[in-house]
Image 1 (cartoon, rainbow, N blue to C red):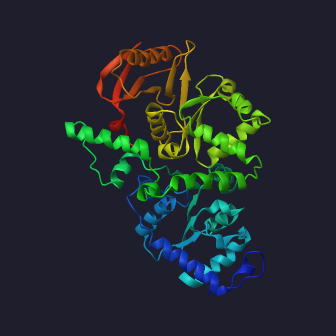
Image 2 (image 1 turned 60 degrees about the vertical axis):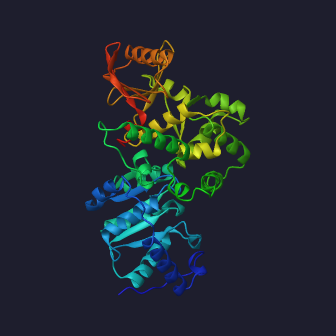
Image 3 (image 1 turned 30 degrees about the horizontal axis):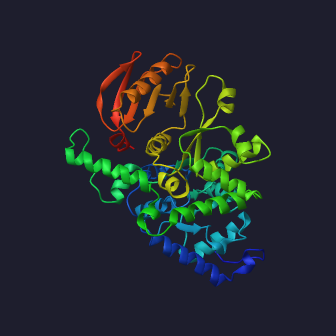
Length: 434
């Protein structure tokens, strides 16, 4: 039998035994009542990891559906099989890793002995990896979410010594977006004219609205703007103790307003009047760590050139880009490229852009599959068609290429550019594969 007792410290002194039990009960009941929504594609990966003794670490942007994914797994397991803790709850302010034993005793007193923990937003507890590893060694299973990629990566690498399964959760894919809206998913290769038109219309909506679940569920509330501010001020400015908040805000706004555009850290240093390139690099890394943006390096055999060459910036969600960024005119081509990047990024980290010595740019190069990928809104214009094929042919003279893909508005027969087979596919249909 476990007995519940707590000595004094900053967190424990705030709450009585009954209050702590009430917190645990309220959190558990709210979690169990979650609207689990559509089944996320990543649930299959979570289920695959269930039989492993490893911790399952789900990371991603705030409000992207990490808790919902946990709830989907919890409902697969049953209400009496797990504990639930949400460290985003302000009642856990002051909680320290050393308090976990006492919290565990309270959990056992309330729920009995269980062997599985579901824990939300664990990055709010400094040193969390210590108690997770200790309990794992006693045979407990952990499903954990967090909103800070670098924090999770650093601590997992040093403390959990490989005993974890990392799972990244992105906003809704195009297929998930269609499922959320209860729209039919057509059978590729057997599409009618009406099917194709409906799919293009759905892609236009997806390009405008993005895939943040709550923003789609409550379209009349400015949730994307609130989400953006929370990440910028709570997850970045407060966590990293940034005093030059206006510079951070301007930099983030600039990057969110320029998806799929090459940016130079040196030029941004001058533009935002920050003291050094290192400051720019740090700010960009904070934005990356909080899942707002991704940076893409050029592919080059010189690692040094990869590091110093301009980066391409992509946003975590096109709806978020549309809500917080600024464009003089519709930026459809760049937003489509951003969607393609997000789909690719969920499959591999080995993604680059490529610029040939002749200064022809290819949007993506995947060295593992030796594939070049170009994204263009339309292929009807002869000059655009020539540009895309010319870039592929030029790249093929300098890097290893087995195949190329052009993503546009239509499907075409396989063609050849400089000996490289080139497939031309509809972006909407291609996105359904993810």
